[in-house]
Structure formats: C-alpha cells, structure tokens
Length: 467
Image (cartoon, rainbow, N blue to C red; front, side, top):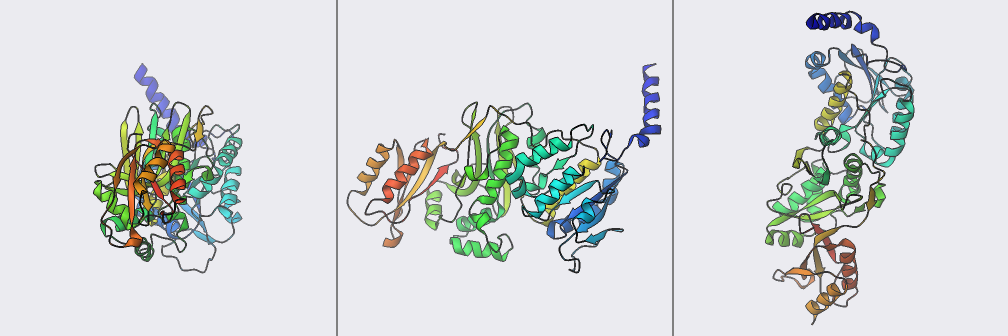
C-alpha cells in the first residue's frame, strides 16, 4: 500500500506539475519555470562572450541536467556596431538600452558582467525590484553596497514563496567556487581564519620578483604585457581589489559587514628585491594576502598586506596568476581552494554555474549568510612581524633600535643583514616575536625619525608566526 501511494503521487506531480509552474516574477509562484529559462546579459565583452560560448557548447548537457533549456534572448552593449568575438545564439538580439532587458517580462534572469559601480548598480537594483533573478561577477559593487543589496532582496521577497535570487560566485576569485563553499560547507563548523592569494596580477608579479629576480617595475611591465594588469594597476598593486573580495568573504564567514576602507590595506609597491633575499634566507617567500581571523568569540580582525610565508606553507607554492584561499575551521581544520582567479572562461564558468543552478530551481534563502550582530570588527591584530630598515652608516644603530623596540613592547627574535654591495642599498631586517601591529607601527615611526634612518621602515606580518 505504501508503494502504491508513492506511485500515485508521482503520477499526479507528472501530470499536473507544468500547470503549477508559474512565472518566477509572480508572487505566490511555487517553482521556477525551468522549461525555458530566459536570460538577458548586460555586457558583451570578455566575460559576457565567454558565458554565451559555454552555454552554447554545453547546451545538450545543460538541458539534460536541468530538464529544460536556457535561452539568451538579449545582450545589452554600449556599441551595437562593434564586432563580437563570439557567435550570437539563435534568436538572440543585441540591444543598447537597459530597459530593453529590464522591462522585458519574458526575461527571468539578468546577468550583469558590465562592471563598475554606477550603471551596474542601477541595473542590478532595477532587476531585483522587477522580480528578476540576478547573476553578477561584480565584486566592487557587492563590496560597496552589500547591506543595501541585502535589504533590497528582503523587500522584494516579502510575500513570495519563491525568492528573487542573487548569485555572485564569479565576484570572488573568478573560477574558484569559494562563495558556494562558504555558503554551504561550513554551516556546522566554526571558521577561525581565512587567508588567500586573491589577486592574480600581484601574485604573478611577486612570483617574477622571487623566482626570476625581477625588479618591481620589470615585473609590472611583464604583467601588463600579458594582460594581467590594467592600464591603471592601482586597484591590483595597491591591494584594493583583494580588499573588496576579502570584505565579501568576511560577511559569509563571520556574518559581519565591514566597510572596505576600514580594513587595513597595504599593497606591494614598497617591496624590494632585498625583501625576497631575506625571505629566501629564512626559507620562505612573500605573497600578497587577504586575511581575516577570529580574535575571540566576538572580535574579528582583517588586513590586506604582503606577508612572509614559510616554504612549507600551503600558500607559498601558489605561483603565477593563480588564486588560492585557505579556510581554517574547527571541524575541517584546513581546506584550500586553488584555481584561476580571473580571465574569460574561469569567470564565465562561475557565472554559468550560477545560471544552471537557478535553472535547476536551487534556492538560497540568504545569499550572504545570516548576519551576526554579536560580532564586531577590530582593526588590530597580533602577529610575528618582519621589519626592514634602511640606514646610513653610524654608531649605535643596533642599540637605538633595541631601545625603541623595548619602549613599545616589541621583542626582537632575530636580526638579518646581507653583505652590503652599495651604500645606498644598506638595510637590515628585524624579525619580532608576536606583538600587536599598532606597536610595530610605533616602532617604525620612531626609527624613521632617527638621523641614520634612510627612507620609510617597511613591515609585514609573518602569516603563521606565533600569533
């Protein structure tokens, strides 16, 4: 009798399921109409073209996976006369007006890969308000407006059985599925630290400076020639791109919203060949990392900075433009995600995964994970530090440095100094014990005021020192 009931129920669903498939924009709809998911794309450039190509190439597989089809109906671009490097799908139209997609009731899903935080914001907000699902690769938009986007989604979903969905896997680390993992794989876990190489341009440059002994300027020129660096590389080399990604991951991991400008951000522009020489002496290397970690049950600290890593560290072997994120947690201990963090197909692949997920009727009630009002962000952390000090020859340098460190409660673990080839390059390095970063900043400021000090003192955390 139990088997008979199951069979009869299956017959009923099969016979009447299509009638229950109301359009996703209607309040009270029970399921997304996956018979034909209609898509409008904003942006027909590198990533937009990659999305179209993957959807066309994998069409049969995707149709079998979703039980329906995905149709790209319109692509909105700035210049419709510009030649595209991809073939338009059958029935797809190139448009130049945003409303051609936003006001098209037949379009279920808006894909935003146009970039920027002005027009893209208007497109995303309008799509949500009109009940259209959104897939975006726009990390800058999310990092800047996450609380507003969350509030807009909550308002749009009032009274809905099926929510308006917001997906953004491609916004952080391109092809690495770190967003979905943070949404679903640590629900019963407690994340204590996230550390990541989350900018491909800077990792390529640092690899060149370390492995190939290139100067900063030569490494940047090479990255630019290969297309890893923008015409204005400030967002990359200044660490700001990594900071945007880190702030998004912090919300997912810890439930806190932190304004980007509150996170300490130091790029790679002050690194020199000498820093890599000293790193090699210590058996390690230097990477630009975004790091967020629990200080205690309520306080979360974060920073973007060059960091010294030991040679056996999980992140030290990540070279070139590759990205990697390590998540330290109570249950899983260490989970590392490695892959391509940018580019046409890695980024498009993540967008397509989000599109297919929606076509399968997967739902995410809280795309940014629930907030944690009991958690607070603090812009201070303890670590072992590397400090590089340039100097002019004088008596009593070591004594004065020791006195300044003692004054600010910084214990010196060791001193490093290479043979001096040129007087202008004279510099030594201090490795501290674990101390607050504020103390290290005070030490550097006091050292810079001394007569023999040459140039700013440079400091960076040791990722897994005694902290």
